[in-house]
Length: 90
Image 1: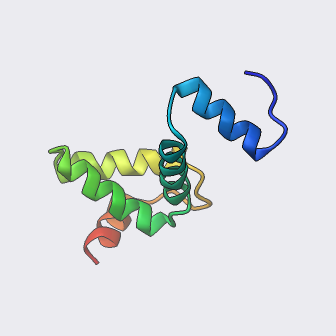
Image 2: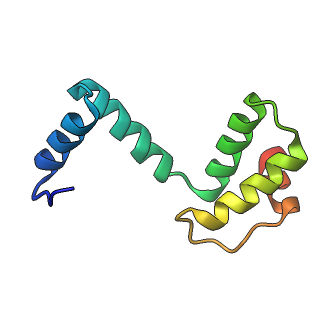
């Protein structure tokens, strides 16, 4: 990948590399930014909803969320399964 010098260069690089329209780039960027602006509690609730839609059971969901929190950009102590459950159900 060549070095980009501005946002417009980056944008054009992504549009060309993935053969997407400018509108598709804007939607992709909005999704990306909104996902990475989530707080830990919001992420837990969002992931629980998404994984439930995939048909996973709560025990598997809790463990997956616990592992994902360790891998993402959150500045947070590890959450226990109990803490995750409390975030979801109050």
